[in-house]
Length: 189
Image (cartoon, rainbow, N blue to C red; front, side, top):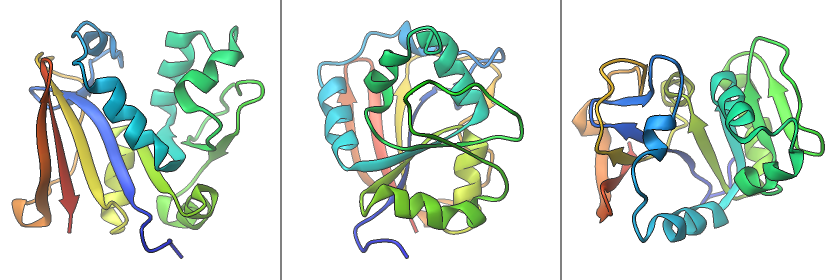
């Protein structure tokens, strides 16, 4: 059972036209946009309340390649700190030496008790992708969507959330401007 204050939060960035990654599964477009003055502070405050991270295999593989983590495993801490990370996959993937990575298969509902327990009462950060976040939504386990909107359009790629989610299920909690980004937080009801 989840701690009373524990939340499952999908925190990510998206293009103006609603894509997390381009058609090559790259996020390079995101890093071409200058960060705002508050980006690092906002992410640090958010991460301080996170006990576990969850991501799909495509996100994991992109981070591995982008940060060259297999050759430089010490860099894992820059991205994930000491947090356990659950990676949903149907394939065998390389493991970063020294990192607490838990490769899991199957429906989110079956793994969710282990994810919540690993979070130790802190929040669960669903890093990506959109379909994985959608699986949390499908079982009523997604509490919040925090999205940073980048000033770029991609035309195609991996969608932010490939589910229909009506306005009556979303309540705007906050919206801030951070450099060229708009950061919005929605509670999911």
